[in-house]
Length: 287
Length: 287
Image (cartoon, rainbow over all chains, first blue to last red; front, side, top):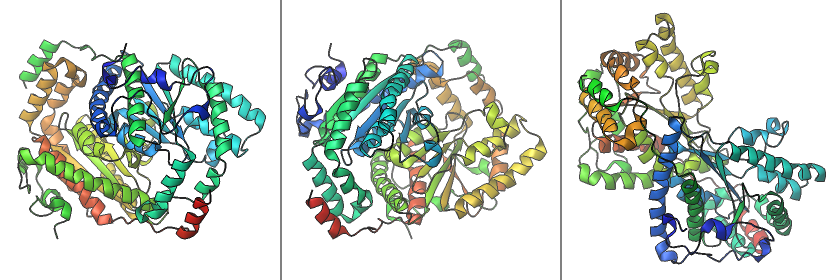
């Protein structure tokens, strides 16, 4: 069944982009637009229409949690190489939702206190409560991506982490959280062009860091680390989705569609009043 | 000087709505629209235009904090009686800003752990870092509002708190935070009508709580507690603003204008590159 939110898609976006058995990252074309039947000109309209649906679903999700009727929540995990568009997703997709229903966390280089704990310590503190859409801008996956590429932990420890991540995400989903894992996939060439734009514009200089070029030199190692992440942690309960992201408009629509799919799966309902509505009307009218 | 953001206002909004010497809350007409020269039909357009300005100013504020060039931040404190429109302000004014630059906190009934500490303990943990716009949906002022009306603390303790609040806000402003304190003022009649709407619509029942009518019965005591708050805590460095809020469109425009005023006062600048731009272009091009 095609959800009503996906009328301009062929097939379910979640199925199209899901990392399944035998997935090979290098076979994804970052400039492709799988499943979407409209073009860029109409994408803005579809994004606005999706935003209105997301808005109502989020409010229902929040509302039903208030009476304790449901423990459901959503967690969007965003991973990508620099400049792939995580910020744009947060601004244009997450930003269309009432901020009162969002718990956003940008994970930076771990502090000394965070490093003194297990790698999941800081992450576990930021999972969404019932009713919320949590968003991780980077996540525990950094600990098996940069952690592996830069040798920040031993191979044995990296190996242990895949299992720890799966256990952690299983507990989350068992507790009612739909985990939506997204890797935005841009091409090596597109990254060069986006970083160059940051250097070309004085109002974008602050987004550039000389370390970006050093990280870029590790591109093949990162791709290999992502491939392993997909093989080890794309589970039935918390599958990965790889979103081609050279076209920003496509990536935004696709992530919005994945969020809509998760919320439609929850199918949140307005809670039934736990008080006597007519009695309350009379009490209020008397004031 | 009238800021460019305020072309449809007569005078500076911050001046018009500021609580100064001799202010009397009961003299504010909640249905008035002080200073605004357009009508409701044009308010949506002005709100959208203000949102674009807020967006750029927020990004500049964030950008300049990234290089450590400035410690500036903004803290919006929202207080009001139930149904006065705090949620609408957060959704429509705060929600127009990139979520990556917002730190929103909704203060609920204190937990046992919070009650075991001084009343400012939980608040101090949620002040914005440099570059952020912090938003308090309710705040430390609850501790001298419901705290006083419901006798949750002794009169001596309430008395002590006004001074503690002023000291706390002085430290904040000294550290670079512009504190924008807003009380949304609705009329007793308008509150009845809004609560009744929540009872009339099944999709709004979740927003209603029978306790709302009990709180409403304390209306004169709350107004008196607010009056005292204004007299004791509207300081030069962190003044209060009372925003007439029976007309939601006016309240949203006015709070947006207060935020724009605070940001224009900071006048954030794009930071200058701390690296050699031409050298980085060459390094990047070589990849």
